[in-house]
Image (cartoon, rainbow, N blue to C red):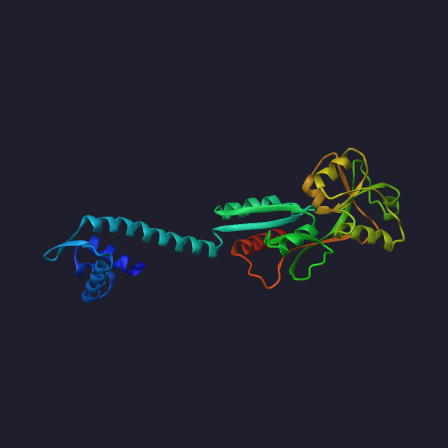
Length: 289
């Protein structure tokens, strides 16, 4: 017994006539009669009572009809779900976002959810190094990270470049690196990670030594510390924009080439799911618009 035989059986049960069922199935009558006979022989039961050309289901035939309908409907549902998954309408979007997240990320997630409400979301926030390891172990499919970053074995697609800004709880106009070096700084990220190294290298190029009083990779905690007056910080402009706190002030740094690069990574030579591709396209459209 297979799906094709069950489809034939359902057509006969509903049409109550072999000829009408054959016409419905776009096939000739003899092969359909043979299929029905083989099905009854395999099951060892009589499925129809014949009364001339009319055919009525027996009790056993009625039982098979109800079960066959359920099975065929389930098969159709599976096909539809698989097609929806291929189209990106179903599935899972597992994505990581760097703690130095960019402005508008939550808006993009909400927009994606409106477009694909049946796609489950798994969102992880952490530093770029940790997210890279999660992508490599396939705990998440892709991640939005800040450079510099060692990404061997990964595909990297660049999204944007932006400048760092000086952030404090007091308004300062266009501070220089020399002026900032004299201030207590809370470094976003921690030693050995991309943003930390970017900041350190900018001061080193200018033969300056920064006054680091703390390192903090949690942006909410970092901004609260700055707002409380513990120290100032340097972050990519979009990070400051994401917080929009009236008690915090941001200023461009007048004499520094201090830039951050953000992109998305996924496993090299690895299938990227349709939900992930759809989300990447949505992000690129919003960043470049």
